[in-house]
Length: 168
Image (cartoon, rainbow, N blue to C red; front, side, top):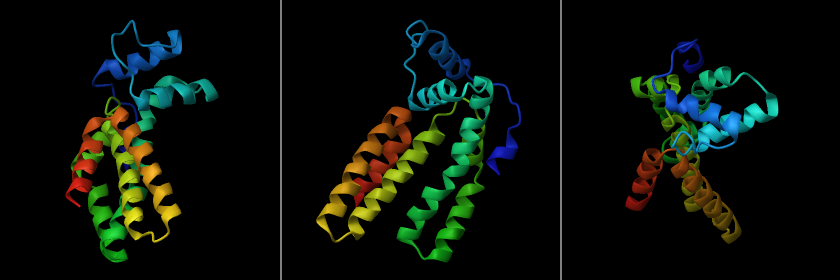
């Protein structure tokens, strides 16, 4: 539902969009005095490859990532619950107000950070299930890389996932 909620809203914070425009024009955000985060660099690199209008990329980045977030949430829930319970939990999560709001604003980097943090959580949950040492090492290395990238996207989702893992 995330893609249909935001046809053409005005940005809440112009810094998010302005940082991407600065990256496009100068290759850096030094003039803005703002360090771009991973999602802004991702939009910038997609622009460099495709030359799609940056406004269009900015408008649909979060709704698309928000929609894709359903996949890692479902697989994490499936690791912890039965298949039916995981489907119900994912459906409730998908239609929660906060998820819809964060997926529909241009300036929100929480969506991408949460997406990466949920992939990291899935990898962590797989570490516990694997019996072979090589598989555990691969999933642990993947977990570390993705959680670090998640921290540079938005620190809150990564902190929550690290807190949940530390309680395990």
